[in-house]
Amino acid sequence: MEILACPKCQNDHIVKSGIINHKQRYACKKCNYFFTVNKIGKKIDDYYVTKALQLYLEGLSYREIERIIGVSHVTISNWVKSFNIKKPTHTNYHPTYKIFNHLELVEYLKNKDLLSGAGMIITELGDKFMLIKWERFKD
Image (cartoon, rainbow, N blue to C red; front, side, top):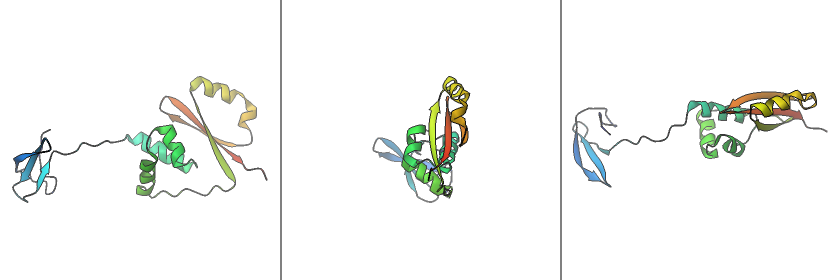
């Protein structure tokens, strides 16, 4: 990996300065900062961030979203905090969800009894579809 600039001061005048833990160490000539190669890190696609936040707003828990999307519940919690999202209170409604492929979704939607008496949203989730349904709690 080619280092082009100091991560601290962004100066491009850097020199090699030994090896630490089998990684090349560099030194910045301007600010005298020592560093190794930049970490690439993992970046999760914005699609999954958006879906996770949508599901959170729909009333699903962090662990439910983790099972659906495959991203850690801690990561989802950090996204919610970083975007400063507040979940609205749904005291009278209880969301349930189901994951379908295309043919299963078509069959489910053919049954009118399953569609009445509840709010519903269908969202794409990779190659599958998620149906979220809100039903009033019975007194």
